[in-house]
Image (cartoon, rainbow, N blue to C red):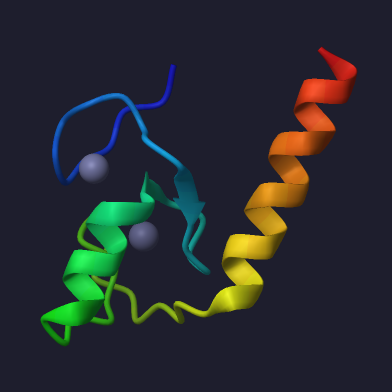
Length: 67
Ligand SMILES: [Zn+2]
Ligand SMILES: [Zn+2]
């Protein structure tokens, strides 16, 4: 089970940043709203866009189909 390093809960609508770290969709959105565009874990600058969300959605569907 993946844990969100921001809210310390189980990932809710997990979102993968370009650095590879995972956070809740809501946690990343909240950070982006406050103008933070770096990963809370590794401080790497991360791009948050619709493509990331789409990729994660496709990945989730892939996992559901194969496990
Ligand atoms: Zn979270
Ligand atoms: Zn990171």
